[in-house]
Length: 124
Image (cartoon, rainbow, N blue to C red; front, side, top):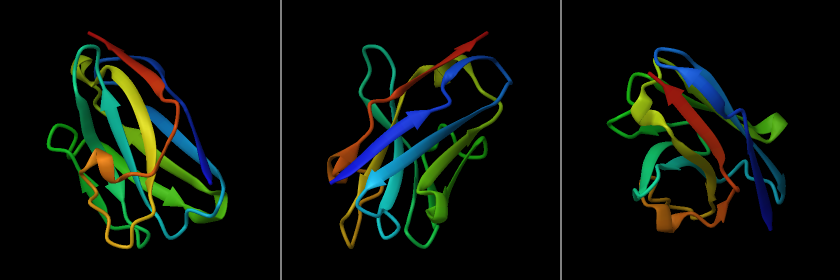
């Protein structure tokens, strides 16, 4: 089994930055794809970013150019650096792990393990 724990959420002003962390434990996730999704109140889950085990990166259109996903396998941690934050980035952010040898990075249902989420609130 894999456990995921997000941290780093909080309150930021528009134009500001936050860095989310996702610490993994249990089985090694170094060969897994890792992703970030978010859910705003009353909205569906939205794909934010993903990173392959080889560190290829993928981004949702709404965050491209502003967010950066990285991973440090030695620390069993995935990061989401968020810059130029906008009020519409307000959501609960979830970290997820996909053990599939051919992951569908954008597809929420493809991910096997999920964290509890961390709240990000961006004020205007």
